[in-house]
Length: 391
Image (tube, rainbow, N blue to C red; front, side, top):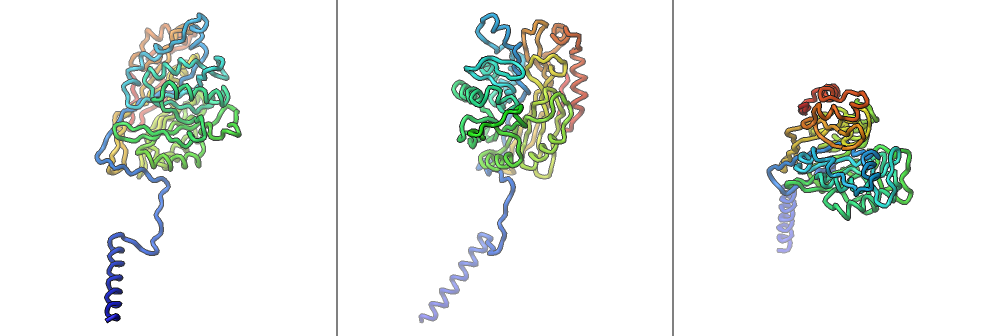
Protein backbone atom coordinates (compact mmCIF):
# COMPACT_ATOMS: atom_id res chain seq x y z
CA UNK A 1 0.00 0.00 0.00
CA UNK A 2 2.84 2.38 0.92
CA UNK A 3 4.56 1.58 -2.38
CA UNK A 4 1.38 2.47 -4.30
CA UNK A 5 1.12 5.77 -2.45
CA UNK A 6 4.71 6.64 -3.32
CA UNK A 7 4.07 5.90 -7.01
CA UNK A 8 0.88 8.02 -7.04
CA UNK A 9 2.67 10.90 -5.27
CA UNK A 10 5.53 10.75 -7.78
CA UNK A 11 3.11 10.84 -10.72
CA UNK A 12 1.30 13.88 -9.26
CA UNK A 13 4.62 15.66 -8.67
CA UNK A 14 5.67 15.14 -12.28
CA UNK A 15 2.29 16.38 -13.53
CA UNK A 16 2.50 19.51 -11.37
CA UNK A 17 6.03 20.33 -12.52
CA UNK A 18 4.99 19.82 -16.13
CA UNK A 19 1.97 22.07 -15.63
CA UNK A 20 4.23 24.77 -14.09
CA UNK A 21 6.55 24.66 -17.12
CA UNK A 22 3.55 24.81 -19.46
CA UNK A 23 1.95 27.80 -17.72
CA UNK A 24 5.09 29.88 -17.14
CA UNK A 25 7.24 28.87 -20.08
CA UNK A 26 10.22 28.14 -17.84
CA UNK A 27 13.31 26.47 -19.28
CA UNK A 28 16.07 25.53 -16.88
CA UNK A 29 18.88 26.75 -19.14
CA UNK A 30 17.11 29.71 -20.77
CA UNK A 31 19.47 32.73 -20.80
CA UNK A 32 18.35 35.93 -19.06
CA UNK A 33 16.91 38.52 -21.44
CA UNK A 34 18.23 42.06 -20.99
CA UNK A 35 17.74 45.35 -22.78
CA UNK A 36 19.91 48.46 -22.72
CA UNK A 37 16.98 50.68 -21.84
CA UNK A 38 13.75 49.28 -20.45
CA UNK A 39 10.86 51.66 -21.04
CA UNK A 40 8.29 52.15 -18.31
CA UNK A 41 5.24 49.90 -18.60
CA UNK A 42 2.17 52.02 -17.98
CA UNK A 43 -1.13 50.62 -16.77
CA UNK A 44 -2.93 53.04 -19.08
CA UNK A 45 -4.41 52.04 -22.43
CA UNK A 46 -5.20 53.94 -25.59
CA UNK A 47 -3.30 57.10 -26.46
CA UNK A 48 -2.85 60.71 -25.43
CA UNK A 49 -0.93 63.78 -26.59
CA UNK A 50 0.48 67.11 -25.48
CA UNK A 51 1.68 70.30 -27.15
CA UNK A 52 5.25 71.56 -26.81
CA UNK A 53 6.89 74.91 -27.45
CA UNK A 54 10.59 75.52 -26.87
CA UNK A 55 12.87 78.52 -27.39
CA UNK A 56 16.61 79.09 -27.28
CA UNK A 57 19.00 81.14 -25.21
CA UNK A 58 17.81 83.64 -22.61
CA UNK A 59 21.10 85.55 -22.78
CA UNK A 60 20.93 88.45 -20.32
CA UNK A 61 23.36 91.13 -21.44
CA UNK A 62 23.66 94.29 -19.37
CA UNK A 63 21.79 96.34 -21.98
CA UNK A 64 18.63 94.43 -21.07
CA UNK A 65 18.66 95.66 -17.47
CA UNK A 66 20.93 98.73 -17.61
CA UNK A 67 18.30 101.36 -18.39
CA UNK A 68 16.00 100.41 -15.53
CA UNK A 69 18.95 100.04 -13.19
CA UNK A 70 20.48 103.43 -14.10
CA UNK A 71 17.16 105.19 -13.47
CA UNK A 72 16.65 103.48 -10.14
CA UNK A 73 13.44 101.89 -11.36
CA UNK A 74 12.15 98.62 -9.92
CA UNK A 75 13.04 95.86 -12.33
CA UNK A 76 10.18 94.53 -14.46
CA UNK A 77 10.86 92.56 -17.62
CA UNK A 78 7.47 90.96 -18.23
CA UNK A 79 6.72 93.10 -21.29
CA UNK A 80 9.81 91.74 -23.09
CA UNK A 81 7.93 88.49 -23.78
CA UNK A 82 4.51 89.97 -24.53
CA UNK A 83 4.52 89.00 -28.23
CA UNK A 84 5.57 85.41 -27.58
CA UNK A 85 3.35 84.88 -24.52
CA UNK A 86 0.43 83.49 -26.57
CA UNK A 87 2.66 80.63 -27.73
CA UNK A 88 4.38 79.80 -24.47
CA UNK A 89 1.44 80.36 -22.14
CA UNK A 90 -0.86 78.10 -24.16
CA UNK A 91 1.50 75.16 -24.64
CA UNK A 92 1.18 72.10 -22.40
CA UNK A 93 4.97 72.19 -21.95
CA UNK A 94 7.08 75.29 -22.63
CA UNK A 95 10.90 75.21 -22.54
CA UNK A 96 13.53 77.94 -22.31
CA UNK A 97 17.31 77.74 -22.03
CA UNK A 98 18.49 79.74 -19.03
CA UNK A 99 21.80 80.56 -20.70
CA UNK A 100 23.01 82.97 -18.02
CA UNK A 101 22.16 82.73 -14.36
CA UNK A 102 20.23 85.19 -12.20
CA UNK A 103 21.58 84.69 -8.70
CA UNK A 104 20.07 86.70 -5.84
CA UNK A 105 22.54 88.39 -3.53
CA UNK A 106 25.25 88.71 -6.17
CA UNK A 107 26.32 91.82 -8.07
CA UNK A 108 24.84 92.23 -11.54
CA UNK A 109 27.39 91.32 -14.15
CA UNK A 110 27.85 91.39 -17.92
CA UNK A 111 29.93 89.48 -20.47
CA UNK A 112 32.01 87.41 -20.08
CA UNK A 113 30.90 86.56 -16.53
CA UNK A 114 27.13 86.98 -16.28
CA UNK A 115 24.62 87.55 -13.52
CA UNK A 116 21.18 88.97 -14.29
CA UNK A 117 18.38 90.25 -12.03
CA UNK A 118 16.08 87.66 -10.50
CA UNK A 119 13.22 89.65 -12.00
CA UNK A 120 14.19 87.97 -15.29
CA UNK A 121 13.12 84.69 -13.68
CA UNK A 122 9.89 86.36 -12.60
CA UNK A 123 9.23 87.33 -16.21
CA UNK A 124 10.10 83.84 -17.47
CA UNK A 125 7.51 82.39 -15.11
CA UNK A 126 4.93 84.99 -16.12
CA UNK A 127 5.54 84.09 -19.76
CA UNK A 128 4.38 80.55 -19.07
CA UNK A 129 7.65 78.62 -19.20
CA UNK A 130 7.50 75.52 -17.04
CA UNK A 131 10.81 73.86 -18.00
CA UNK A 132 14.12 75.72 -17.76
CA UNK A 133 17.56 74.38 -18.67
CA UNK A 134 20.12 75.36 -16.04
CA UNK A 135 23.19 73.67 -17.52
CA UNK A 136 25.28 75.88 -19.78
CA UNK A 137 28.86 77.04 -20.13
CA UNK A 138 27.87 80.01 -17.90
CA UNK A 139 26.38 77.97 -15.05
CA UNK A 140 29.43 78.53 -12.83
CA UNK A 141 29.81 82.26 -13.54
CA UNK A 142 28.79 83.15 -9.97
CA UNK A 143 30.43 80.05 -8.45
CA UNK A 144 28.60 77.00 -7.14
CA UNK A 145 26.99 79.09 -4.40
CA UNK A 146 25.55 81.51 -6.96
CA UNK A 147 24.02 78.67 -8.96
CA UNK A 148 22.52 77.14 -5.83
CA UNK A 149 21.13 80.56 -4.87
CA UNK A 150 19.36 80.75 -8.25
CA UNK A 151 17.96 77.25 -7.82
CA UNK A 152 16.69 78.12 -4.34
CA UNK A 153 15.02 81.25 -5.72
CA UNK A 154 13.15 79.12 -8.25
CA UNK A 155 12.22 76.52 -5.65
CA UNK A 156 10.89 79.10 -3.21
CA UNK A 157 9.04 81.29 -5.70
CA UNK A 158 8.15 79.08 -8.67
CA UNK A 159 7.90 75.42 -7.70
CA UNK A 160 5.91 74.81 -10.88
CA UNK A 161 9.04 75.49 -13.00
CA UNK A 162 11.05 72.33 -13.51
CA UNK A 163 14.76 72.87 -14.04
CA UNK A 164 17.25 70.37 -15.41
CA UNK A 165 21.01 70.04 -15.64
CA UNK A 166 21.92 71.53 -12.24
CA UNK A 167 21.35 70.44 -8.64
CA UNK A 168 21.43 72.07 -5.24
CA UNK A 169 22.09 68.85 -3.29
CA UNK A 170 23.51 65.38 -3.88
CA UNK A 171 20.05 63.95 -3.24
CA UNK A 172 18.54 66.19 -5.91
CA UNK A 173 20.98 64.77 -8.49
CA UNK A 174 19.02 61.50 -8.39
CA UNK A 175 15.63 63.23 -8.22
CA UNK A 176 14.65 62.91 -11.87
CA UNK A 177 12.24 65.47 -13.31
CA UNK A 178 9.02 63.90 -14.56
CA UNK A 179 5.97 65.97 -15.49
CA UNK A 180 2.66 64.22 -16.13
CA UNK A 181 0.82 65.89 -19.00
CA UNK A 182 -2.57 64.59 -20.11
CA UNK A 183 -1.72 61.22 -18.59
CA UNK A 184 1.71 60.97 -20.26
CA UNK A 185 4.69 60.89 -17.89
CA UNK A 186 7.34 63.08 -19.54
CA UNK A 187 10.93 62.65 -18.33
CA UNK A 188 13.21 65.69 -18.66
CA UNK A 189 17.03 65.73 -18.70
CA UNK A 190 19.68 68.34 -19.52
CA UNK A 191 23.43 68.47 -20.11
CA UNK A 192 26.20 70.90 -21.08
CA UNK A 193 29.47 70.35 -22.93
CA UNK A 194 31.51 72.42 -20.44
CA UNK A 195 31.79 75.33 -18.00
CA UNK A 196 34.08 77.93 -19.62
CA UNK A 197 37.15 76.55 -17.90
CA UNK A 198 35.61 76.25 -14.45
CA UNK A 199 35.76 72.89 -12.71
CA UNK A 200 33.05 71.29 -10.65
CA UNK A 201 33.81 71.65 -6.94
CA UNK A 202 35.45 68.58 -5.43
CA UNK A 203 32.77 68.44 -2.76
CA UNK A 204 29.94 68.94 -5.31
CA UNK A 205 30.69 66.71 -8.33
CA UNK A 206 26.91 66.34 -8.77
CA UNK A 207 26.32 70.10 -9.20
CA UNK A 208 26.01 70.25 -13.01
CA UNK A 209 25.29 67.48 -15.52
CA UNK A 210 28.04 67.40 -18.14
CA UNK A 211 27.71 65.63 -21.48
CA UNK A 212 29.09 62.14 -20.87
CA UNK A 213 27.74 59.06 -22.62
CA UNK A 214 27.96 56.81 -19.58
CA UNK A 215 26.21 59.41 -17.42
CA UNK A 216 23.47 59.93 -20.01
CA UNK A 217 22.93 56.19 -20.39
CA UNK A 218 22.65 55.75 -16.62
CA UNK A 219 20.17 58.64 -16.40
CA UNK A 220 18.10 57.23 -19.24
CA UNK A 221 17.97 53.82 -17.60
CA UNK A 222 16.66 55.36 -14.39
CA UNK A 223 14.27 57.94 -15.78
CA UNK A 224 12.77 55.43 -18.25
CA UNK A 225 11.54 53.43 -15.27
CA UNK A 226 9.30 56.29 -14.18
CA UNK A 227 8.39 58.06 -17.44
CA UNK A 228 6.76 57.19 -20.76
CA UNK A 229 8.73 59.56 -23.00
CA UNK A 230 11.98 61.45 -22.56
CA UNK A 231 13.02 64.91 -23.79
CA UNK A 232 16.66 65.97 -23.45
CA UNK A 233 18.13 69.47 -23.45
CA UNK A 234 21.65 69.57 -24.96
CA UNK A 235 24.03 72.53 -24.60
CA UNK A 236 26.40 71.60 -27.44
CA UNK A 237 27.80 72.55 -30.81
CA UNK A 238 30.11 75.34 -31.91
CA UNK A 239 29.36 79.01 -31.27
CA UNK A 240 28.20 80.99 -34.33
CA UNK A 241 28.35 77.88 -36.50
CA UNK A 242 25.10 77.18 -38.36
CA UNK A 243 26.21 73.66 -39.33
CA UNK A 244 25.86 70.52 -37.24
CA UNK A 245 29.18 69.29 -35.87
CA UNK A 246 30.29 65.67 -36.05
CA UNK A 247 29.97 65.41 -32.27
CA UNK A 248 26.38 66.68 -32.36
CA UNK A 249 25.53 64.13 -35.03
CA UNK A 250 27.08 61.29 -33.05
CA UNK A 251 25.40 62.31 -29.80
CA UNK A 252 22.00 62.71 -31.48
CA UNK A 253 22.22 59.18 -32.86
CA UNK A 254 23.38 57.87 -29.49
CA UNK A 255 20.38 59.48 -27.77
CA UNK A 256 18.16 57.94 -30.42
CA UNK A 257 19.61 54.50 -29.58
CA UNK A 258 18.84 55.11 -25.90
CA UNK A 259 15.20 55.84 -26.71
CA UNK A 260 15.05 59.63 -26.42
CA UNK A 261 11.99 61.04 -28.21
CA UNK A 262 13.03 64.72 -28.51
CA UNK A 263 16.33 66.63 -28.34
CA UNK A 264 16.33 70.40 -27.82
CA UNK A 265 19.71 71.94 -28.65
CA UNK A 266 21.26 75.29 -27.78
CA UNK A 267 24.60 77.10 -27.27
CA UNK A 268 25.76 78.24 -30.75
CA UNK A 269 23.75 81.54 -30.49
CA UNK A 270 22.62 80.95 -34.08
CA UNK A 271 20.10 78.55 -35.52
CA UNK A 272 21.02 75.13 -36.85
CA UNK A 273 19.00 72.56 -38.84
CA UNK A 274 16.37 70.21 -37.45
CA UNK A 275 15.54 66.64 -38.40
CA UNK A 276 13.70 63.49 -37.41
CA UNK A 277 16.03 60.54 -36.90
CA UNK A 278 14.04 57.45 -37.85
CA UNK A 279 15.23 53.99 -36.82
CA UNK A 280 13.49 50.65 -36.45
CA UNK A 281 12.53 51.15 -32.83
CA UNK A 282 12.51 54.91 -32.35
CA UNK A 283 11.85 58.27 -34.00
CA UNK A 284 13.77 61.14 -32.42
CA UNK A 285 12.90 64.75 -33.22
CA UNK A 286 16.07 66.88 -33.07
CA UNK A 287 16.33 70.66 -33.03
CA UNK A 288 20.11 71.05 -33.13
CA UNK A 289 20.15 74.73 -32.10
CA UNK A 290 17.35 77.19 -31.43
CA UNK A 291 19.77 80.13 -31.35
CA UNK A 292 19.17 83.20 -29.20
CA UNK A 293 15.72 83.97 -27.86
CA UNK A 294 16.71 87.13 -25.99
CA UNK A 295 20.06 88.90 -26.15
CA UNK A 296 21.74 92.23 -26.89
CA UNK A 297 24.08 90.83 -29.51
CA UNK A 298 24.51 93.14 -32.48
CA UNK A 299 24.53 90.85 -35.54
CA UNK A 300 21.51 89.99 -37.63
CA UNK A 301 22.29 86.27 -37.21
CA UNK A 302 22.35 86.69 -33.43
CA UNK A 303 18.89 88.27 -33.51
CA UNK A 304 17.29 85.25 -35.20
CA UNK A 305 16.33 82.24 -33.12
CA UNK A 306 13.85 79.45 -33.44
CA UNK A 307 10.73 78.17 -31.71
CA UNK A 308 10.31 74.41 -31.63
CA UNK A 309 6.62 73.59 -31.88
CA UNK A 310 4.96 70.18 -32.11
CA UNK A 311 2.34 67.82 -30.72
CA UNK A 312 3.66 64.58 -29.25
CA UNK A 313 1.33 61.57 -29.40
CA UNK A 314 1.94 58.55 -27.18
CA UNK A 315 0.29 55.13 -27.49
CA UNK A 316 0.21 53.39 -24.11
CA UNK A 317 -0.44 49.99 -25.68
CA UNK A 318 2.49 49.97 -28.11
CA UNK A 319 4.69 52.44 -26.14
CA UNK A 320 5.34 54.25 -29.42
CA UNK A 321 5.54 57.98 -30.09
CA UNK A 322 4.45 59.95 -33.14
CA UNK A 323 4.48 63.66 -33.90
CA UNK A 324 1.99 66.06 -35.47
CA UNK A 325 2.28 69.71 -36.54
CA UNK A 326 6.06 69.72 -36.22
CA UNK A 327 7.32 73.24 -36.90
CA UNK A 328 10.36 75.46 -36.72
CA UNK A 329 9.09 79.01 -36.21
CA UNK A 330 11.71 81.78 -36.47
CA UNK A 331 11.97 84.18 -33.53
CA UNK A 332 13.50 87.64 -33.58
CA UNK A 333 14.93 89.71 -30.75
CA UNK A 334 14.02 93.36 -31.21
CA UNK A 335 15.52 96.41 -29.50
CA UNK A 336 15.76 100.00 -30.66
CA UNK A 337 18.79 102.13 -31.51
CA UNK A 338 19.15 103.28 -27.91
CA UNK A 339 19.55 99.65 -26.77
CA UNK A 340 16.16 99.80 -25.10
CA UNK A 341 12.65 98.43 -25.52
CA UNK A 342 13.62 94.76 -25.84
CA UNK A 343 11.00 92.39 -27.28
CA UNK A 344 10.89 88.77 -28.34
CA UNK A 345 8.60 87.93 -31.25
CA UNK A 346 8.04 85.33 -33.93
CA UNK A 347 8.15 85.76 -37.68
CA UNK A 348 4.36 86.21 -37.51
CA UNK A 349 4.64 89.49 -35.58
CA UNK A 350 7.85 90.76 -37.11
CA UNK A 351 7.57 93.25 -39.96
CA UNK A 352 9.62 95.92 -41.73
CA UNK A 353 8.37 98.60 -39.34
CA UNK A 354 10.16 96.79 -36.54
CA UNK A 355 13.15 96.28 -38.84
CA UNK A 356 13.35 99.99 -39.65
CA UNK A 357 13.78 100.96 -35.99
CA UNK A 358 15.90 97.97 -35.01
CA UNK A 359 19.31 98.77 -33.53
CA UNK A 360 20.93 96.37 -35.98
CA UNK A 361 19.48 98.39 -38.87
CA UNK A 362 20.85 101.59 -37.31
CA UNK A 363 24.27 99.93 -37.47
CA UNK A 364 23.87 99.47 -41.23
CA UNK A 365 22.94 95.76 -41.17
CA UNK A 366 19.97 94.33 -43.06
CA UNK A 367 17.47 92.67 -40.77
CA UNK A 368 14.37 93.12 -42.90
CA UNK A 369 11.71 90.44 -42.80
CA UNK A 370 12.81 89.28 -46.26
CA UNK A 371 16.37 88.91 -45.01
CA UNK A 372 15.19 86.87 -42.03
CA UNK A 373 13.10 84.62 -44.28
CA UNK A 374 15.98 84.01 -46.70
CA UNK A 375 18.47 83.41 -43.90
CA UNK A 376 16.24 80.90 -42.12
CA UNK A 377 15.45 79.04 -45.33
CA UNK A 378 19.16 78.81 -46.22
CA UNK A 379 19.98 77.20 -42.87
CA UNK A 380 16.94 75.00 -42.29
CA UNK A 381 16.39 73.83 -45.90
CA UNK A 382 13.42 71.45 -46.17
CA UNK A 383 13.69 68.71 -43.53
CA UNK A 384 11.31 65.77 -43.93
CA UNK A 385 8.39 65.96 -41.53
CA UNK A 386 9.18 69.45 -40.24
CA UNK A 387 7.51 72.65 -41.48
CA UNK A 388 9.77 75.69 -41.68
CA UNK A 389 7.41 78.59 -41.05
CA UNK A 390 8.36 81.75 -42.95
CA UNK A 391 5.25 83.95 -42.73
